[in-house]
Length: 486
Ligand SMILES: *Cc1c(COP(=O)(O)O)cnc(C)c1O
Image (cartoon, rainbow, N blue to C red):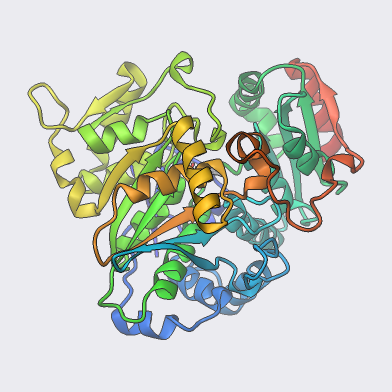
């Protein structure tokens, strides 16, 4: 299996070669040269596999340059009931992503697939935990080290820290805006005592943190000397890890491959649903892929009109489903590449236009950049949008009707999923976080606190380990240099 760039100017790479990287050198995103295919017979034998064994079968198709025995061990080390233990009471942690029937209308099922049972109670653990083990493995093979440097306003940073804690050859330096995260999120990150994790609380806002990351990324000499890398959502291995749970969800919801299933995905950077697209391209019988956005509706606009228009900061709203508050969708380019018939030159031109003019138009109308929007239905994509009022109403509705408490992001998904039900086709909504992470909105909707999984009851009281920093780049570089020993 070889990997290419969506912008078409790259020699073929292997899985291991792109594992530790982000963007391709030409500014594009990595994708396999062709999608591996899954036969119906294979699907039948996969239906009864454990999550770890299924993960192994799928990883094997993408990571062809890692020995099978090593991949098998990595999959079994990652997907355990101990790591994904934060299930709802009555659910079986060994299933890793258990499915639950929410409601059934005239024989059409609406189900929830729990992806948030990992250590940080959000779906990013599904991929990040594998990445931690893959990175440690790859670095050991190369006798190399890696210093992960990033900025977070919550979810991604904590998922990265929990995935990399205690890993040999890896340190994490994570910037966050001082006193701007929720008490729960702060406690999750800052209570980690592992010596390879450095929480840097910056006196400023999230944008200041991101600017600091950019400043370091642009200093190529420093980056190289201190072996700086990132783990953002465009990392290819993260996308592959997410492909696995679409297979698991489909296979658990069906008894035969004649049956189709649709997925609704609370979306921001298009990483999660991009994995669904890849599963569908591999031959998984997915009917529709429903993109659910919040008020930040860049993606909903595209899937309704064919116009992709990134938002300015002033047009990017802070919502109560904050992990979907995006101005542009960093993984979207992967889908556009397939949509325009895998034409790297077209993708390069379209995304150059995103830089210069803030977007592109594939609606086929006079003056547009192309007419490929007409092909979107072939890929199964549809979309919808949900607002704060919708989230609150949906959280209340599921709690009152089904005694089921869901978080704000998942509520966006359920709201949009209900608008896209097809008679006889099971709809699976991906649960991307547990309600404990977004207690304020749960209180607003239900007048009570969110349930907290065991072990999280008093997390805010644990001792915290962090450094407060100014936005001074040189001081930050000095801190990194002092702690990498390089
Ligand atoms: C990251 C995140 C999302 C958005 O996922 P994308 O891959 O960026 O589309 C949705 N919900 C939660 C809780 C998240 O943490």
